[in-house]
Length: 392
Ligand SMILES: *Cc1c(COP(=O)(O)O)cnc(C)c1O
Image (cartoon, rainbow, N blue to C red; front, side):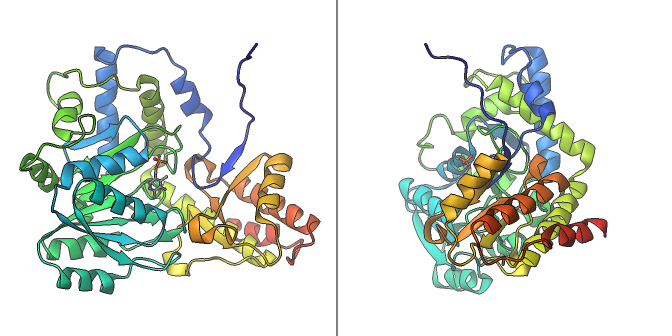
């Protein structure tokens, strides 16, 4: 007979999901109530208000899509891209490639701006793409490329989009909660994120926000939105402010309790403090890794604190190390994706997993594991190097 599933307790320092705090887990275990219950609706309004604060926006169309980050991505493209629309898509990793897929599946023309994996989106190339193409409807880019650990200049990219009369569509799945995201300040028109990266919720919800300009673009479509579930005109009847809520779909009630609690925790800490924590612990991890002789893939100015891509030392068996970390330390770190498979590890410091304890655990576990495999690293120095940064 099949028995109850009890997952092992892990420390999640990969590219997501990240560790979920006990407070969020216990919120999720509270009694399920009806999704049109007045108490649930009150909670939904609080979630919406907290998401607006988190995105730094007044956008009325700000809400959690009831599906993972990929659905948030699709919600942006399916609503904003019509057949024949030109969209400049920046690709410097895995997720830009998915944006291209989305544009093309909805009948748009994706004008690709390619940058090497591990580097930021090149503003000059984007300028050139605008100069070479007229009537571009939108510029789409990934703010924090989780596949490589790169941060691109979202503010400057949004400025380029607006200077050329285009909407700015931004993937903030990994950036939100870990580094600055300023939707109104930067003029982002459509943005999507995910709960399981720096918000440290279970996966399955995608916060999104549309500017007034984006809402108008949806309302002025010549063709109906080809997805019923993700059609913003319909979802707004459910999540929209000030009034009666019409049934659209059954909200994932308990997952939204979890998101509510995670947002409360983030408000208690303060958004700026959360960004500072990610930065400080990234610097501590970096000091330890570099003392060991492990180097970063990404240039300093484009590094994401919450996703550290490090080069696997010569002759080291990638999978054997990750398996040993999991077996001996119950610690998960991420493998490289695509062209970087076998070449890098991706060490996440996301949300609740971004703690001093995890930094020290990861350094200790990596050092012991690599030393046991006779890898070319320096032993006995990483912990002190990290502690020196933490003491600053
Ligand atoms: C994780 C991630 C996604 C996809 O989110 P899912 O919740 O896995 O669907 C999209 N973009 C980026 C940058 C991500 O890191």
